[in-house]
Length: 288
Ligand code: CU1
Ligand code: CU1
Image (tube, rainbow, N blue to C red):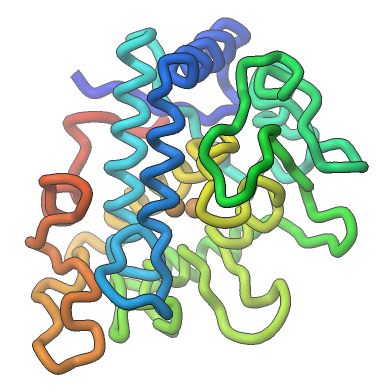
């Protein structure tokens, strides 16, 4: 039977504890750092050659959908009552909102070195030492709201701009795609400074610290953020039922995106699954 993913602000004290305990168990078993490693390995940008699957590409949404399912499966092997909560950052918008509770993800990083020193993922607990990263830092860092150069989380209106677009994605299927739901949600904009960071990208910026860059999985809020992104995809699908994942066919040989993006019926590495197979997951889970 399908299980339910809940808004993090509605979890009970015991649900929060079970989620945290399962995360710590997955970390202790060494599985968590494999997720960090996979995300780093698949952090390929437009400027690099080769196939892009996780970011700056149409498969941004199905890639993360499958990635979340793998982590959730690991959590549920520890405790079958656990599901991934989601963080609705259009509602929970401050550095003391639901995700940042002491008994959930802990709070902001301290001033001097941005080290997270509160909650279950603080370095001093000994339970959350970073092993995989793009830097050698061993402790989790956050800079909620970016103290030195403040930015705001995306609003409901910002999300609406993305949800309103009936077309899933458009050529050139990368970070420069000006239209389409995928990039409006992934959030590669044009222009300088923080205006260029929209929706999904802007949230990574707002959290700061470990959430910047390829090793963002080191902050457990990664999963809560991407669960909300995944929920928004289901809302878009419900609103535009005649529209589907694009491209339906691989870009033709000789065009710039040939072999650079995954079409609807092509395999989505590192899994043996296609975007088509990941469009309907209602038999696995639903959102409350
Ligand atoms: Cu990602
Ligand atoms: Cu992300």
